[in-house]
Length: 319
Image (tube, rainbow, N blue to C red):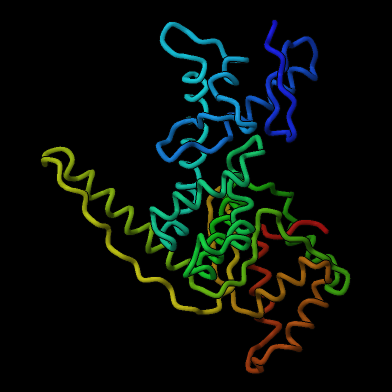
């Protein structure tokens, strides 16, 4: 399969399609060119850019590895894939981060998402990983979440933890009998990999519940009026008040294939975090009790209640 000779390029992203495909290496080069074309950001009018990364006309680059047909040019055929890639990944971020959308606003969220994906294109076989670097992006470029950067970062951590909890890997949970048969000073427990422990500065859990309830009520209202009523102008959705600063501790997990998150008191959170740092059960509990300011608690009873609950939820696996 003959192709025009590629021009020399300085960067990986400016490479052109190989002149022919006679080896696995040349096939990979073509795949890289194709992926670079798909991942390139769209224009403000949602079209493919007219110039390649080396300044060449994109129509010429596309014609090197895409055939035209009787209806579409090589450029137009490639543009379909470029647009669909962006529409798909933007749609995924939109669905996965309703809380962040509420914090920064719908319009700014779309611009934020485009900037994020331009910097961190999808590099995983699964779209569930699409937002894995969103927290880092907001740290590095705080202008996208200003003036509520701290709230936005808390929300992104919370929403990413839900992605992890929903379909993250799980290990065989340790049984209550195995726990009882091992002395506390010898017992080490690991936390399930899908479990996330979050120490946050805002009550993002209640805020996200309110956002989802508002959006759900709006959808139900639109559906109930759709059958017999004439179309109406779009109504502005009810504003949900932003949460005030308040320290909370959350465990985000799943149980029976359902997603859950629950608040923990500071001492319970500290015990779980220490278990995740390879301490024995006894060492973790002793450290937390010795540093706690709550002296009125029956600690043996309280610790038993914690571990009974966590074991029932399947949070522990063998160290």
